[in-house]
Image (cartoon, rainbow, N blue to C red; front, side, top):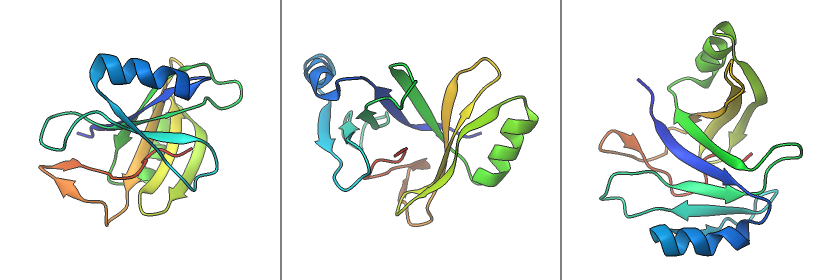
Length: 139
């Protein structure tokens, strides 16, 4: 069974919503430098407590604000095949994210978007859950 390991919040004004999440949940934001677009890594807690970290960015053209979850899989190619065989479609094709892994975005039969990532071999594992220190779902 594969698990959700990362989330992304899409908003037209990422800097304006950061204070909300900081005050309400105590989350920390760190700008991810060197990417092709603005992206903030969201730290939701320390590694000793249950939970996942995420990202904050602007939506792609035509994409509404919202949240996307990313699921870790052992083989992205096999997962893409299963997605297509099960009535889903790939809406953002497989791409490599250096030192993170291989990522694609899929649409389920109801139109919901989900990220699917095959973590790179060097990505640390802790307590059976994948931990990443960089943004795992860079578009």
